[in-house]
Structure formats: structure tokens, C-alpha cells
Image (tube, rainbow, N blue to C red; front, side, top):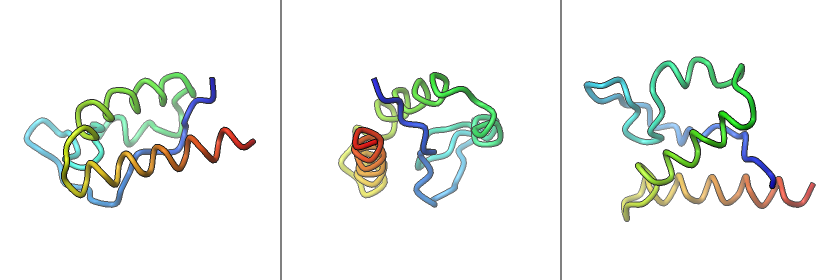
Length: 78
């Protein structure tokens, strides 16, 4: 399985009261530690945020899903 390691940032950084980004669903801590995480940890975050933030019909949800699909298809070609 090709793990997607590209960060899920869609350049709309706005945090809720729980320090979770409203666009990509990562916590401030996850954003800070992203480069040090293993590929499996990154994929686990992707799996979570696709369910929590990528399942809607809004612009941010569509952007998040598109970013994931683009990264996944690029990784599959390698």
C-alpha cells in the first residue's frame, strides 16, 4: 500500500476552540510535528481527517479530498 505522506494543508488555517484546524482537521501539535512523524502516523491522520473534514460538500472538503487523491495517484505512479 502506498501511504500518502503529503500534508493535508489546503492553506486555510483557522483553528476552533479545541486547537483543531477547521480546514484540514489537524491539531496545532500535529501540524508542528508533521515532518518528524512516520509515514504510518501521517496516513492515520489522513484517514481521520478525510472522515472528519473531507466528507462534507463544502469547498474545503472538496479541496481536501482532491489534495489526497492527487497525492495518492502521484505516489502510485512511482
